[in-house]
Length: 458
Image (cartoon, rainbow, N blue to C red):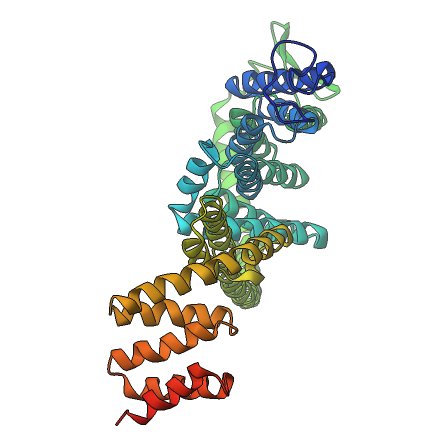
């Protein structure tokens, strides 16, 4: 730990050994931040991810440069399906600690699979689209979108929670409970999910219960009593007509009545029933045709939406990749600058698209470029001049040309660039640059030499 006043290494004393500043409260703040980090680490180990996030955020409120807490927060957010937030934490961590930082490894692992990044971008847009469907009341479309989201990013907790709410809205309590259980498998003490489970239990308790089956009791030797609803029914048993003639007559009468009923009632009813069934079938077929036509139109609209989203996701992923690459190159350029390798730093700066940087990145880019420029011009001139003296004309042309492009006031670089083209037998370019020397340095001995050398060219 370093003193906030002078930067000296602190000891166990309450005062800085170099500037004698009281650092007791400063040290306690660091200790408190580390305590919250340890608490977050313990919660993450037992999959209390929500509690871990709260503890780690508290640690970063006290010490925003606690890279251990920031890296762990990124890992927890990644486990919860929040990939963009995790990458943000790791990039911030890299800015605070550039060497031996685990954030480099985490970012590299994510970047190894650009298709995965594109899929995550798409899931974020689909999740937002499902929220829009919920606002419109299109719960079925929202459920379809969320299922697609979770098939790509199964750890997205807020996706599981929203899908569970939609199932509860449509009275599909079994599926709602399954989604909430999936959240608890990832984050065992998620407060919001536990609250949803309580509401789900209350909702299931309000469902109407099935009527209990009737209970039979023995009313007596010749009867059976049973309860149906609020009524008690007594049914006699064992009563028979033992007369055979009566049985034959009853059968014959029953057959006659049955034939009459069939002829006069059942047959016309059957014909009428067939006609009604035919009409119902025609109506049902018409409804099916209309429903499928509407579904086809809806699918076409959804396909157009998905195509637009896919194109937007590809473009967004390309922009994100370009921004990330620009920041990586900026860090490399700054590292070369810190090592006083001005030429290498300048080459890296030239590969950066300044407009792709954040505001802080642009400030760093401008400051490094301003300091690197002057030193790089001197280095390029000296390298080019030495190469010209050694008759290494191609190397001389490359360095002297860059030097002159960076600073047009480098007239010596312009002259020796023309001489290098002359030495390389590139007559056309030699004439061009000799003429520039004559135009930009009139009346000087260098201009006279340029006129003499150009006159000798074929």
